[in-house]
Length: 96
Image 1 (cartoon, rainbow, N blue to C red):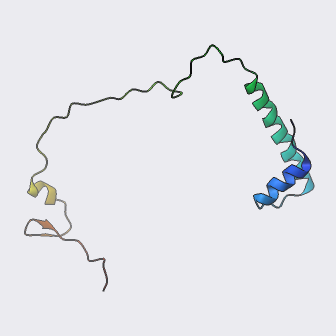
Image 2: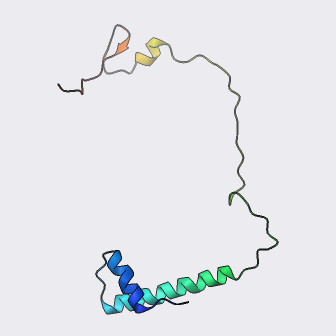
């Protein structure tokens, strides 16, 4: 199977590409080479290969879910730009 020059023009128009004749010819050659590679891939016998859900063997790594203490209020507010009464003060972003 090969791609005709008219098909390349059609695809270029759909992609809104303004290509001259030499660029159209170059793209036609590259697309035909790609189709040749796809044909080679389709010709590979994979009848004895079991299907895999993913190309890389994945497994979940689970860590123990152990509770531990977090930051104290003073530690959390230590780097706050503004705070008052143990709360973060942030600029107002909602306008009326």
